Image (cartoon, rainbow over all chains, first blue to last red; front, side):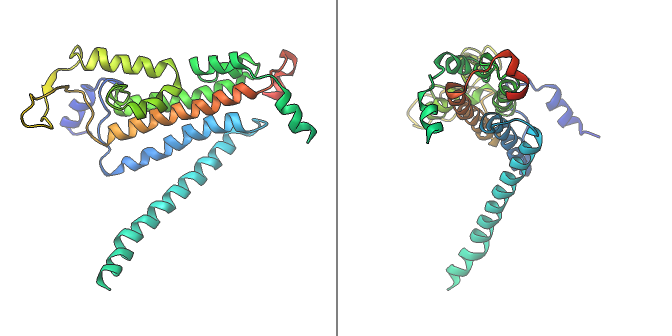
Length: 89
Length: 159
């Protein structure tokens, strides 16, 4: 059940002219379709053959997402664990 | 070694590269690589339209964000059309309304901005989507420049 306020916002939204509603703390999930678009365009031009195109796109997307996720985790650990330890010493 | 020198000897497809800038993937389609062209088109246009959907046309602004626009312009006329829509519809108040925003200089008059102007994280993400679409179209354009045209008979296997 969508709350009435949110429903009003969705109904009043003009696509392409107004920004989409905020995803709150989940904005980083938009990284997945971003990488998908990049991998479709990259694989379409880079590969000598486009046999098994979508499988290669999926693997490229998965690897890139995992790499970006790993970097985010490493940054989180550095900022919230390593820096406080350095400050106390 | 022989293959490398042959590769450099081949003429560049300037026409296909130009048409790829006009419409992503069109150069590959003209060279006979239909499937490859449509896939590249779906990737680039998918990114650009997703950016506009997330951040609105305010994400493409030639005057306020010129550096971002240089990257976005790689997508071709669609970027200029989005910039025109931003200037002609939002900034004039034809769509939405113009409201006063806090001036950067307290002595200056408050500038008027569109009520549809994006100030949330959606703006940054939309701008990034459109810029990456432009940069990916440059990759597609360079591919069209160097790609060998194929005859209709070869189409099924090569593309």
